[in-house]
Image 1 (tube, rainbow, N blue to C red):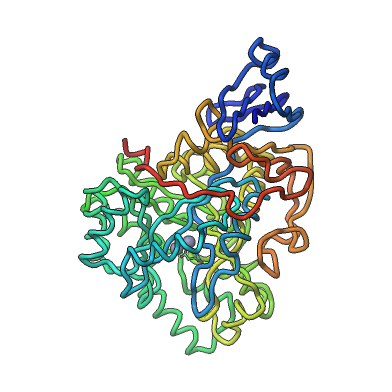
Image 2 (cartoon, rainbow, N blue to C red):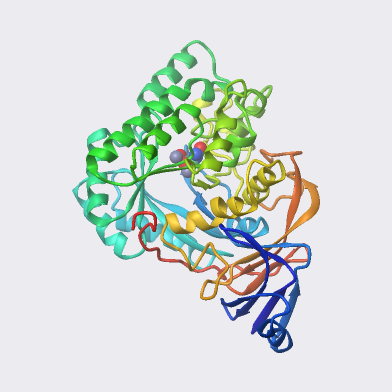
Length: 470
Ligand code: URP
Ligand code: ZN
Ligand code: ZN
């Protein structure tokens, strides 16, 4: 089956051009000038011609940070791999990298098998895995090497969540030394969890139990401190470092300084830190703020965090936008913490909205069109060893292609999203632009406001080493 996408403006991380894209089966085989001889012959021979006039033709989004079905605080994230990846497709994302979780006391191999089984045959789009190492010990360090050979080339560690996921500095350093040896990437949840837990206990002792306290005790200084410590440990361990869900100006300063010194330090931010705030969202009256409990937390709108993050995205001190998609419903899930903010499961769902929300940065001139594509598709693919299979429209790449209509307008709402959540963290946000058609490895999965795929269309993608380290 051949398919020609004609009349659109193809956006890459380096520019935008009118071009026609020819797909054969699952693969892009040509990108041609409109009206050229190859384009005209392709049009007459193609099984299907898709008219992309007036649309941007972009590589399918790569969301490098999702948590389908993540167990957390006695419940689990409300999107499973089937529904969550379908919602991602609706939003123009054609690849996710989720996190397999080794909990304390578990073998890495068993945990990976468990997560592979959860995803197998369920996904609407392609997927890979990072591995959370929740128990750094001799056996798990050894397993890191084996996993790299199997396409799991990044490992997340936590400086937060004492007693659950937290690794101490010695464990972190050991894992970094292992990564330095096997070429993999250490991803860090950089918050000082021990100090946070003390402040959280003190807040509860004072009777301050409402959701906003989650953000008040997770002080920005404690993100900066942990980010600095992670960078220093990575320097000592000689490993690359990728800071996940960076939310605060001070943490960004640490990353910027390290990058200016030439260190292999990278960071992502997430839409929630660009659009939502401690006061307006986490601080909503009653228990409504629980819907905005995530870690790192939303930051104060009276400080320049969001502004600095947009700047970081422009100047590449922030290289990637991921979602940290980790949805929970208010009913029965967020409600677990109605008397104590510490029991509210941490996470916000937005896998469906990343491409649209970051495109608003193009609309408001924060970002160029190529930079939008770069931070949402090309760089995450390169960062995590999937490029040029993913993240670019060029011959030989997977035919993961989104037609994006810049003329459409709509509002995000719980009534129109496809994620399994009983509220939307972005309710009422007006969006200029809309995902029109989504092609996942050559198959049209979203078209005419309908989903045309099925569970199991998405395949596991073993990843190579980060292409930023070569
Ligand atoms: O609130 C969050 N981020 N939940 C998911 C777990 C994590 O730390 O990424
Ligand atoms: Zn985290
Ligand atoms: Zn996460």
